[in-house]
Image 1 (cartoon, rainbow, N blue to C red):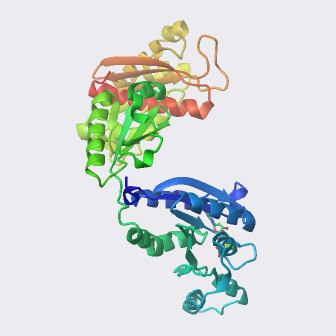
Image 2 (cartoon, rainbow, N blue to C red):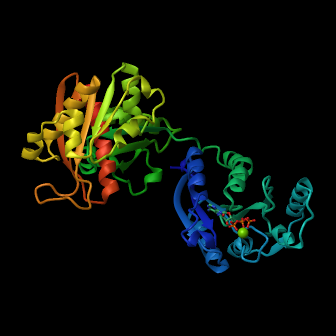
Image 3 (cartoon, rainbow, N blue to C red):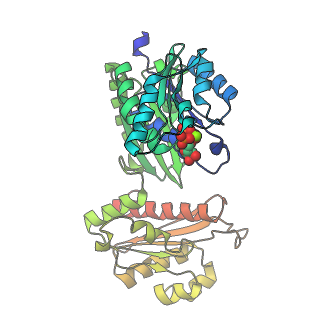
Length: 428
Ligand code: ATP
Ligand code: MG
């Protein structure tokens, strides 16, 4: 394959002592990564380094030798701890010099803001020799673009608002000109419920294998993320411009749909509660919940959807045994015979909630979220579910990992919402 067919590869370097302290999360790398992806540039590496000139110069040299583009954020301020300019000059093996162009930009910024320019701002007009200055419309620190070997380094200020503005105005258009072949990749997404990650791995087979030199291959790339029992899968065409890459992508999408048909609940929206609520609204199916260990989380999730009041009139939080009997009509004997966390009680909760509310669909959850309350027979993480749709009952018992109370409750919520979808669509 010719070099022009190859997709450009990039790294992102976030700079700053404050990022080391674990107090400020790095907001710049995720922003830049998402933007590069849209431009069809492959992001291969993200790094975070303190304001340390030597370490920075070393990293810049290494990353510029490996990739086509290095986007850098932070360390452009006027104080002596801001060393990005000097590090880049060292990495490129050039001197640092005063840039009249950068100086003009800084002067103009102070003029517009009607403030006198402090002397320390001189320092910000120092740029590596040969660097192109990038004007900052939201602050004093100019950015710059510098050739290092075969690669380009683009340095932008650390404050996210300044960085985002500079990227959109100065860097993004330049990338588009520099690499017109970098087009937005073809991408498809699928959101699945009811398949575990390992079952998914079995069924997906070689589709997720990474070719050794994946960037030169036409094979679509597949990625999967798991979130409380739901899976999100992305398929990306590796060569969105080439006919072969497009064809392979389309074939893979059709094949994926066929293979996972019964588990796919959406090809747009990852949020299960929004998908279920909107289906209920569209089909005018009234809904209620009867919740024990989730304490209203399922009902709360459904209320995230605008317009849900058309189908959700009330929901039940029945934490105690007594309330399960009083509010839902669960027979006391059932609870004493099988225990509050049992399929039998979950079924009675669902049936009772449907009956007392008049809703067509009722979702019931009863489980042990922990950390206490587990037994040998029903360890922490045991959750029983039932759905009742037009009088038709379904149930399930899951053993979620004992990964903390919130995890169990999150899994239970997702699972109940998934059961709701299965109930109304007749999925198994
Ligand atoms: P300044 O002129 O403000 O000093 P700078 O380019 O030198 O700009 P830094 O000193 O690295 O930038 O960071 C300034 C502030 O911007 C930080 O204190 C922090 O609040 C914010 N910031 C910097 N980098 C990031 C980042 N990667 N993610 C989120 N916030 C950041
Ligand atoms: Mg600074």
